[in-house]
Amino acid sequence: MTSFINRNVLKYSLLTFCATILMYFIILVLNKTGNNQITLFFYLCTIVYSAYTIGKRDDYKRHLGFNYHLVTYLAYNTIPILLTAIGFFKRETLYFTINVLVGWTALLLLHIIIIAFVKFFSPNPQYCK
Image (cartoon, rainbow, N blue to C red; front, side, top):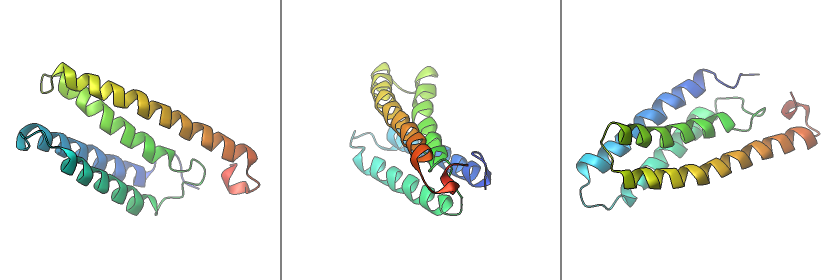
């Protein structure tokens, strides 16, 4: 049984933070048109594919992928806050980030509730360890 933070989660963390920084670099520097849907689509595909390929090597039955969800949450929400703090983003971008943060926090809490529900009601002992 693997721990909550293991080598696969650390690999995914590094990849996610690099992909998030690259996405914001493309949005800030290369994409001056304001049409960011394609960039966000490729970012989403990269994150989902890397979570799938790295995560399938991980035994995450105890926490049902919450560690990968938490890493993505932290990467996507902390980098724009830091970029706003050092002056790369305008305050309006921070307001959008805070709106995303509030919504995503609700989904993260729902993930925690689902994990607790599965652990409590699951007849399978591998989920209850």
